[in-house]
Length: 437
Image 1: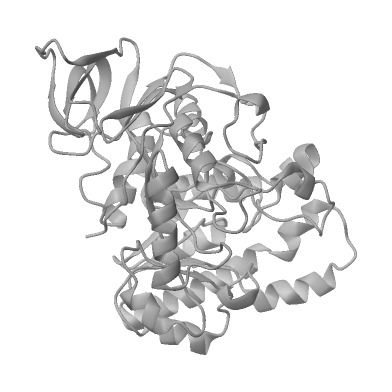
Image 2 (image 1 turned 90 degrees about the vertical axis):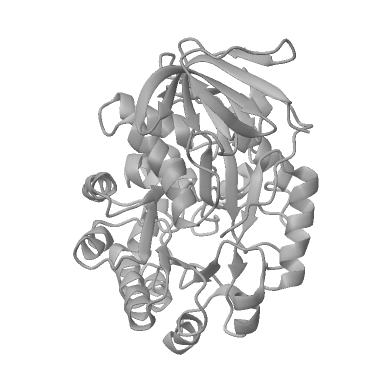
């Protein structure tokens, strides 16, 4: 049960897109009041937030938490512990588990598992196949339909335009696409066969493969006026395409790693830098930053996709693509803000407010009376390195290991309950299923 009364005392609070020193009173899981000073009853738990910054809790709209079927990499409990430590109070999870989340039955199974295990709030995508069109429109509750246009095999690969057209032309639910051209990837795999340098991954799944698929998704979205979200935009070409042709019903996201890492990372961390879509050039980094600041890209997701250290050690091309991210995303972005790449206000919008708006998640993403008390207190004045031994993710590594970051969460609050407090997790807390109005 939520704490009856919780007072966050003298935080620097983001209210109405501006910062002010304020008290924040939480009652029954909701923000009840913000004011310079609030009188309280004796039964109120007080959090002294002097010198700390209070932001809306992060909503991570693209994660792969591996349960069911791949729990040796991650599970809903370990992943939600990592979320709590990273200031992520809600997540939207992808359907490529085993079995796949392609039916109401499997969606229900995930919701049941999350209710028992998750320290933070949760929502799940329904996965598109070439055959499950009825399920895509009737499954509930779901944040949307996930289509893998490329970088997938088996039933979740939907790479034929005729199958894509059937999905785009039926119903109104949000469609989120992993936009890579599978035919081009196949051809380039043959072209680069036998090469073992992981850097070749960015050449096989090149900028053109991403652009081709994004162009196709955009064409179908415009043809059917269908709500489209482009996942993990990675190339300058895609950003410029959307700059000149982005209907009001289209949104896009970018990951922190596509902003702050590039192909040079293969030289230092090898296959730990391998992900889909791959890392790109420094020039792509800059174009993506400009598009994010200009509103061409709407928000940020981590694409948290853990694999074991042993799997990553197999040697390219036998290594799986993906990297963890929920624990480091907020400090990565707040460190970028401190370095002048953006503002803290922008980070809060990109990582919470804009996500809640795009997915129509009620009462989230803003610090104001009546909103859910999903909050994170961060320290913008202290720098600490990313240390492998402190990570909560089951995979036990980070591509940012050794990076010195600021903005680390000090306290994370989910539904008025303190789930993380100065290094300690409260594993008795349980989040709730998100709704999508």
